[in-house]
Image 1 (cartoon, rainbow, N blue to C red):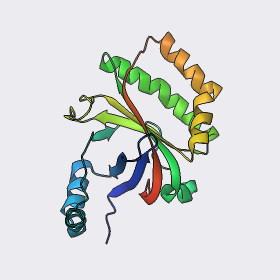
Image 2 (image 1 turned 30 degrees about the vertical axis):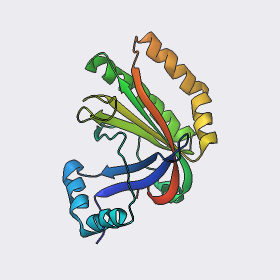
Image 3 (image 1 turned 135 degrees about the vertical axis):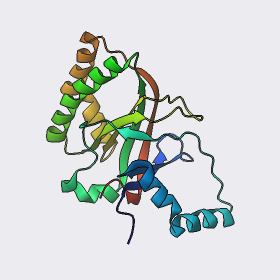
Length: 199
């Protein structure tokens, strides 16, 4: 019967450090859906198989976050091929704000830009984010931080997005609104073709 509430489950490799692996997971009903996933016999079988093969791993950083309401998009149904493709680039960025008012204003301004990207950047596959649910004990992530996620078909599409005049103008809008988020981390990953970014 699968896991219909698991809306994304994909493996990606850090573009700068090939031993760094991101498991990108999204769950329709938050912790409830995550528990359903973790309680399945298939999940235990995977953990047992990894242990039997002495496949050790160390979790460097982990975070769960709740989607920012009506902010960007998490899938492009018209690009279903890209959901499972190898070589897509996932950019994950943490941002901290001096207060919730600044954070909400940042989201409001970048929400407008997301609409532009959806229409004009077909190779931008995901453009959204959410609020960290708790402090992380493994990374510089605090409760309430904005975790921004963007996925593009390849690095050329990332560069095209970054150098678009509309994107460059967005920085000036933040500056004029006196919004100065503190970047806490930024990591880029390349999908392996194992799993799916959406379905």
